[in-house]
Amino acid sequence: MYQTTVKIDGMMCGMCESHVNDAIRAKLPVKKVSSSHKKGETVIISENALTKETITAALSGSGYTVMNVTCEPYQKKGLFSRK
Image 1 (cartoon, rainbow, N blue to C red):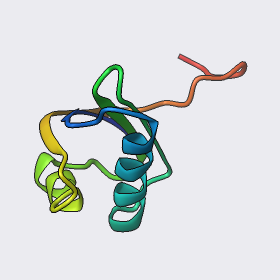
Image 2: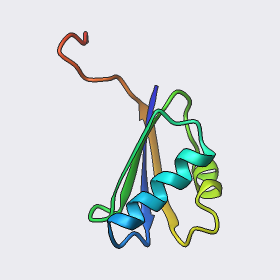
Image 3: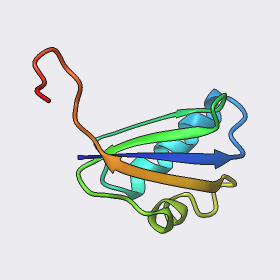
């Protein structure tokens, strides 16, 4: 599993967050996606690592601009997780 954090320019409200989330869900195989217009970012949990190119393509024509992408291994945090 991977957590990809995407800095996005152009999100102004909660509806913008929904548009970004829907576009990503429709075009990429993700487990979870959540956006924050206040932070200007989207966090994606997926089985495979995502690249800036694939995310930019998914948001193409939406009016939002991908500024930066960081992808790192993700381990679900829980009561019984081991280190």
